[in-house]
Image 1 (cartoon, rainbow, N blue to C red):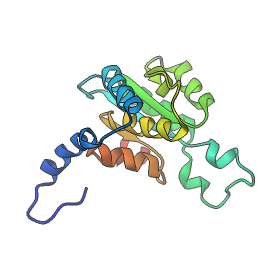
Image 2: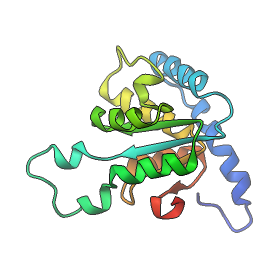
Image 3: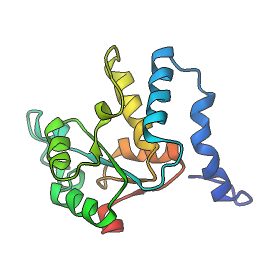
Image 4: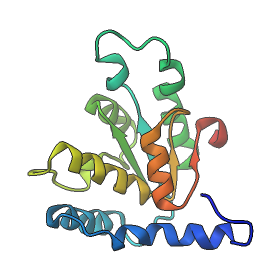
Amino acid sequence: IAEFRWEDKATIAARYPGFIRKIGLNPLVAQKIAQIDAAVGSDPAGTVAYHVRRGDILNERPWKHGMWPAKIEPDELYLQHLEVAQPRAALVFSDLDECIDRLRAQHSQVRGITGLIDLAGCAPSQRDFLELYAMSRAERIVAPVISAFSSAAARLSGRDRQRFVDVL
C-alpha cells in the first residue's frame, strides 16, 4: 500500500476493500460477488487463501525452466500450513483442480472457487476476476514469491500477501 508521509497506512488499508463497491460491474459478476460474500461471510477471521501455481508453468510447452523455482511451492508447505494454522476455511486457487483435490482430501475445510459459487455462464476473464475477488476476502493470503495474482488480491484487500517463509 502506498501512502503519503502525512497519511496513516492503517486508515488507507481499511478503505481498500470498499473500492470494489464503487466500480460499476457486469450484472452477472455483481451477482457472483454477492454470492462470494455470502459464502465467505462478513468476517474473514480465521480464513486463509492459497495460490497454488502449477499448470501455467508445467503444462505448457516448452517448460518454463528459468523462473519456475520461484513460482512453485511444494504441496507439503500448503499441507503443513493447514496443519499449523488450522483455518476455519481455506480457499485454494489453482489452474489445476488436482492440486485443490489433493489438499481437500487431507483437509475438509479446503474449497476452490467452485466450492463457493457456480461459475456457469462466466467468461474466462470473469472467472479470473471472481477468483481474485474471492482470494481478497480471506484474512490471510499465502502464495509463492512470484505471484502477481495473489499480489493483486492482497492489494484489493488492503492486506499484505504472505509467503511460506513468513508463516511457517
